[in-house]
Image (tube, rainbow, N blue to C red; front, side, top):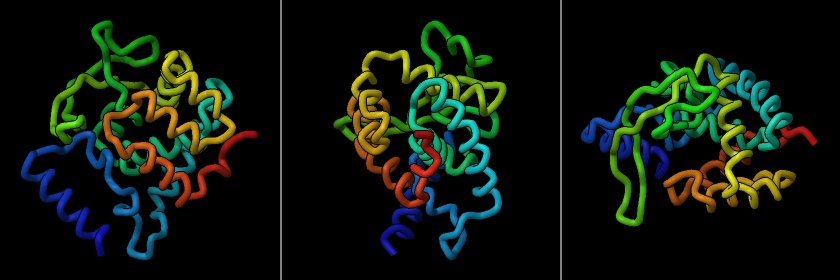
Amino acid sequence: MAAGLRRIVAATVGAVLSVTAPALTGTDPDAYAGPTGRLSADQRAFLANATAVARTSQRRYGVPASVVIAQAVHETGWGKSDLARSSRNYFGMTCGSAGGGPIAAGCRNGPDRVCDRAGCRATVHSFRVYRSMDDSFADHGRFLSTDPRYRKAFAARGKPKTFVKRMAKAGYATDPRYAERIVRIMTKYRLQKHDRR
């Protein structure tokens, strides 16, 4: 009941504020499961594709596959967000003053939501555009593995839940509950079985 009420309130607030993209970002991924809580065919297909690419990213960059998959589910609502569909951007990766970096094909402006001590608000950011899911996942892994602020997270890469908490603490996302949300997805969908040991 509470989860259903939160979804209704979130949908109403989103409609009032005209916040539509990245669509479904930061929402409860269970809201998109079928009435029995089972994954739809589209969700199973997304999970299969994301798992294959996340395992490649784990081998190359060291980010646990379970973390990568959970982030992609959370950030895109199982691949349904506008940013994922139109830009193949599965992590909300933004462009900086120097552009999109060595992997992105370009940048485009889009609505976003940021949180700070005063609360959360709608804003606009320049997001990276990718040629493929593979490129998006590779850029995510490259970003985390080359930024020194995530060193403590990589020291715990054998413990994915600790990895997520350290990554969030280092400032990965503005949502103060980001780590909690990612860990919940990892746990509910038993994503740690996809980690390569």
